[in-house]
Amino acid sequence: MSNLTCKALAAAAVSLLEERPLDKITVRDITDRCGLTRNTFYYHFQDIYDLLGYIFREEADATLEKYSVKGDWKEVFLDILSYLKMKKRMIEHVYYSTRKEELEFYVQQVVGVYALQFIEIETAGQEVSKLVKGTVADFYRNAFVGATFQWIRDGMKATPTVMAALYDNMFRGTLQQAIDSAREVLD
Image (cartoon, helix red, strand yellow):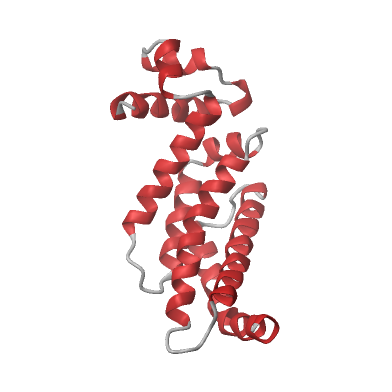
């Protein structure tokens, strides 16, 4: 896949998503915007949803490369929420489309990696099974995604800084208790 071509198609799609809902964008709109042909589009992507997946995978990869794991949930939350807020129109146009699962997958992927790594840090020196760690990581990942989607539905009124601080305080305040509770049931 030609990286420059994919990036041009992605940039055109993002530009269009700032203007109108995903369900109102065609392959022709994207190719006209970046000066490429429909054949070129279909050489690189199966459809618009495949391109959307590419866009969010690229963002997820960039976020994952950015941070070393040091137990700082707030920094990761702030980066994700800031991206969503910066691209508010685009995010809303995807979220309210028939394919919001692409957006959900992006957020789940990034948060899932960090949730497990942060739990590894939190449980260092404790005997905690992989099952408990995975279960607690899944719980917090899903809590973050659910709360973030509610924030999107509410119009992203609170700032990313406020939301990141809120999530960080809630997660830090309950993490050890969640680990202990999961151990009681699963170990």
